[in-house]
Image (tube, rainbow, N blue to C red; front, side, top):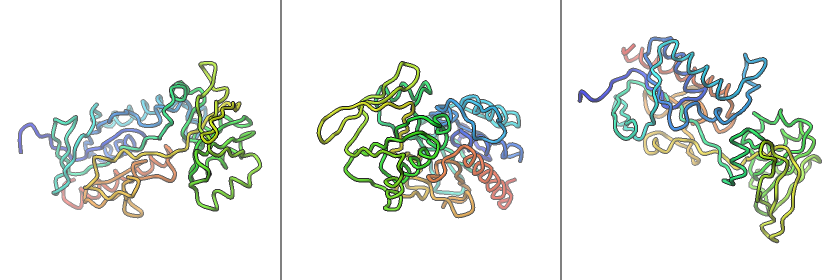
Length: 317
């Protein structure tokens, strides 16, 4: 082995609730974990202004602050947290090889993948403005819908997740306007029926957001374009929820780990194990159903425990 190659017992790829929780458990088990934060240190929660549904924070907490606290907790127990992203992997043998920033080579006895997923957005400058300042654009109705209770909101999407989130919002908001880009839903029949039968949900087909309106700080409405007639009209709202899907950050694992058709890592039921021995997965890189901070943290715990047991069985811990 080259002197330039670093050998570690436990490598955690990615931060966020999953990665940091895995780090806390791994470091407390004397696994000397090394964590690379990736391209978005702290993960998706760094784009969330207020987190009110994570247990232990009765007054709520901002997403970035929560990630800082999780990072400090992991560091307190000895986790080596580093900047950098994993650019390449090689899982051909018992020693798992990765390359950091296209240069540094690291060999790990165990790897915990916590690379998460990225929400898809429309890409409008006005959308990105109110997303970045927390002024009314969100990609998670379950996370942020509570802040819009009793208000008028818009949701964009046509699949099962969009229908489910529209129903969730209808339970707490005054009204929900749902924009569907084509003439029909992509959702299952039962989900479509639930949306259509909900009197608080107004469905606009062949419709897209042309612009998110606001005063610079908060959203006040949207401009809608009918892509069939070319006509424009405004819809007043205080919240805009984008539900057009997520993309798991798993491209570098293609050809090594089993992925589903969307790219989510397939774990063995009831565990964090992947198809490669010694490689485990946690958080939104594998979870396309719940996608919550608390569930990500739970799977981070599972991954660290599974990694510890793997090392013990191999006589490496």
